[in-house]
Picture 1: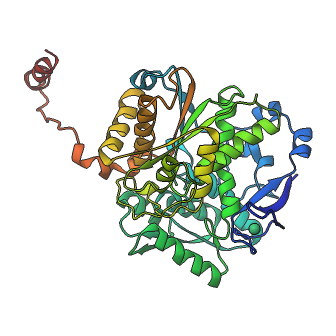
Picture 2: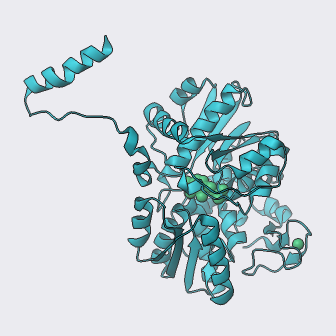
Length: 415
Ligand SMILES: *Cc1c(COP(=O)(O)O)cnc(C)c1O
Ligand SMILES: [Zn+2]
């Protein structure tokens, strides 16, 4: 049973039937999927959700599909990990990591949005799908298109990480490297979607795609024991994830599944691409586009599609935005790995580094509950760490060598 009522313009409130359309024909603002929450609250109880299988489809009534998912059956419900050692390092009382580095099938939160977008593409009858991507979205579209039997075209800036390029091609996707930045790649995809009858997940399927991000928010609420955190730090590229986690938290409250908590949303970006946090620091929502130059290529969107709404979400919640330099990003990756044994990608380094700054600034209260969204896996961005690789020694397979070389150094170090 579906509870979708259709699409609604975020600005002028004009409504549309649920078709492949992402922007309002009157005012060009983004379209949002609307649901019948009253009927939903009457029909579905949180106990029933909690008894379902551990994947994102346990929240299927809150997702915009009319039929069972065509792809991504095992996506989502990633661990929410208590992080006491990182909490101690950062000086906060209660810290959890939402660990999407182990999401299925391609190790980033993008598996959630793609599972919804390609399932919707199947409902609309598209046989070819595509996306513009900073890497992770392309990986996920390629993998899930292969599994779902779609042909796929992935458009990326030519300078993204080699691991992400390989991680797209291996699935048999048509990878198109574009000599330009993400915003130019995205514009090209918009032109392509006018001409070809394809389901481009972040262009004509964007209203549905972005709904998939809500599942990260539902899971945080459920995994905290049907409780919302007082603070959450979320990395931002196009700004969609942070706005959808906010929508998810609001929906959980509307349904009466959690007590109302005024969660403060904190947005994290890289200093070399910080259009949204720059606006937040000025206290405004209008975004001035930037030319990206950062290690955190997955977040390198200089003209974010949902930047305005992301800034508004942050400011309305009483949260804040911060950015992290390349060195701080690498330090953030290492801190998370050495304290909690979680290897996040550069976006994870951004999130940890920004959380540290916000705590030091007193913007995040040390006594309040805090969740960090770690959204992608470090094995896809190993090159970012090459310059800081730890030196290691090689010994002969002799006890004497071990003691002379390894343990001797060790004594020297620990004195
Ligand atoms: C895409 C991405 C984000 C940000 O997503 P938006 O919804 O575009 O803001 C965060 N982290 C990682 C690893 C990503 O790939
Ligand atoms: Zn409109």
